[in-house]
Image (tube, rainbow, N blue to C red; front, side, top):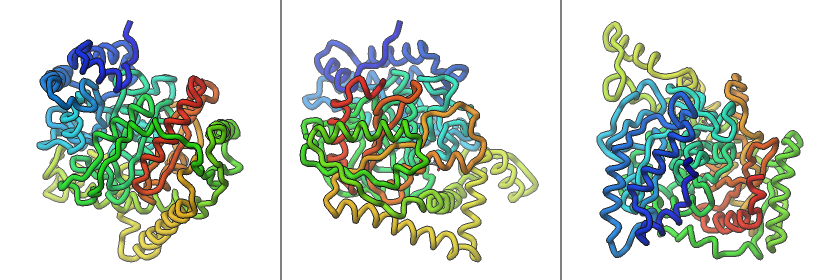
Length: 483
Ligand code: GLN
């Protein structure tokens, strides 16, 4: 019988001590995948896997074992979302238009993982081009939630969340444009971190909406996620939006205390309409933090209600521009048609799924000459107000904010057919992407047996405070976080 993966720290320490080697860690992950039914007909967690590729990465990690400075993730298998470029496995963004496409270069985060001794392990299923909140919009079919097989794992990074929740790997990478790491982390009962905009290089991340996109980290625990972020964060000359700032030791934040911290509870994230069982879980978590000596302060972020409309103008606008490159000429699929224009039309209409097509149409519309000022410019102005809400609250002495991650728990596969209803899944997460601030979700208990996520949000580059609060809450909740 296979058991869930040990933590990243355990895997690394046992590798350094020589009691477990990277090859054994890979074989355990392969065995666990098989035992939980991770394949297409089962949980459908992976878009692409290659056991021999994983084994060759393990062999490379083995060579680093004797180094004087063994990497922070030595011998730790890490799953990667299918929009993060790798050299051996395809990078297809869950789309038909890129099915089987293999990148000629690898993402900076993948290089950093390898240099830290980690073992890239499979490409995970996702909503096509990261557009979605359930991983049902993948060209390869939906991923199932490992905790409740008839339900979605959340999205768009649902495959990565499921790989961690199923105990295959302790860490996986996803991407965040509007909540695609935090919301699936909440649905799968694990930890998910969206770093500050600019904290992690996006070189090799297929672009969705460039002013919002960040690579994020899933961990089975706060510590797994902190170690993952420590390794992938930092300046990269290949990404001009990456920040030239030192990277703190996030995994040492567990030594900090929340005593004296001011934790804001934003009223707008606890509306009357919120499921009372979810708000009760959040308030119970806040009570724990208060007992540890934190001050809980009611605060207001008045422009929160504009976040979904603003996001669904800005994100599709940028997506319509970024996705123009998939034209049948330069990448992936080509379907011949009548002349060049016919080829473009056939390739794009057959290559993209319905949601991606909807976003391209929406984005092209809001950017068109007659509507630019009314929609796109207005949305950018309101986005500035949303960001200013956060700056004002943090400047007033609040260290971190605490909110629910999502308005619901994991919903049944096929339950949401109205796109607008799906968009509302991100109501508590898109704000952090619009403002560029860091945020993370962690399990804070269950409702009807399904995980509920609590979210910490911090000021720009204040991930350390966020992790300090998260470690403390995880310790205080203990087994309750999963009960
Ligand atoms: N669910 C949101 C969307 O569909 C966010 C996606 C994401 O963060 N990649 O756009």
